[in-house]
Image 1 (cartoon, rainbow, N blue to C red):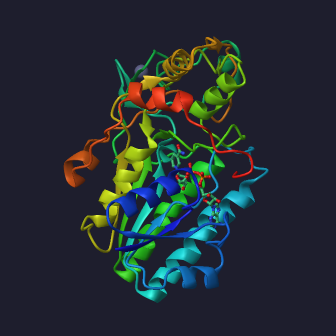
Image 2 (image 1 turned 30 degrees about the horizontal axis):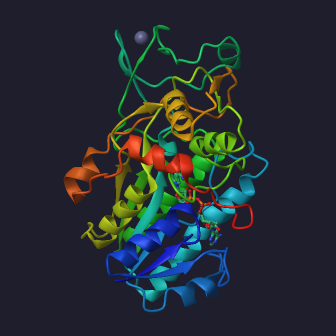
Length: 336
Ligand SMILES: NC(=O)c1ccc[n+]([C@@H]2O[C@H](COP(=O)([O-])OP(=O)(O)OC[C@H]3O[C@@H](n4cnc5c(N)ncnc54)[C@H](O)[C@@H]3O)[C@@H](O)[C@H]2O)c1
Ligand SMILES: [Zn+2]
């Protein structure tokens, strides 16, 4: 297959390109970065990139938590206008297969159970609670402590920041395209992806990258809240393999199918910091009680559907991935 990888010069996209080539496919890249730069918002660039293409793997996006609403227009432009221009180009060119880089952020806070009220949806955490070091969300009905669980694909969407809103809109656009163009669309809702070539610590980078950069400077990683936030850290090579699997699978036409894409093994942010510091040879992390308002407390997915329906299995264990990441070169400022 000839596959257009948008964002193919980025962290995940570059691994998708390698995985496709390694599997005998022919990847072509559309990315604003790099010598042959092109913007997904530019219909002419999209038209050129789609020539002779069988499928599209859409990774291009502006990522991260961002800056409140100050950069909202740029997020919407790159992520949603960009997706719309790409889909219109695909409809015109008759390309009927799409795999989209989705995200767990569309769920907002994870799944919680109250001993009395069953599955509940806690609201955004109050500043007064966070300031007092009360990080765990409580039952919105009775105030009891909650038990965090695994989020399934059928959980309601509840985007809590601008980035999350644009990732959800990408899926709605892809669903509209699938319906009207008879295409098949798959959204892989990635968990926290980490591994080689992860961007350095910009305001948009993931937590593993912040920790890694602190260690490289000889500084202690600073763990937010109390370090008990649960996440699913999935290795970038496993995510790339999931993309290749989804591109090659016969997805249902006319609809969008979504799959949670995680390792299936939740870890806390504190554990990640400790493991990474140990693999790096210190210094030990500090837990400082700082917080970011847009963060969610626990979010861990049930990725069983991707395993069961497409036969994908993650291969890089947490221990092995962290060991490698502790010594990997981050993407340099010149590449970023
Ligand atoms: N890293 C994660 O943990 C994570 C988690 C969930 C979802 N995702 C999604 O995965 C995808 C890839 O993210 P990443 O972590 O590799 O980020 P990244 O920033 O490394 O890669 C994104 C790439 O898209 C390119 N790009 C941005 N706007 C563009 C435009 N208008 N036209 C063409 N190219 C453009 C950038 O130049 C960059 O190379 C994104 O869609 C992101 O939302 C990432
Ligand atoms: Zn309750």
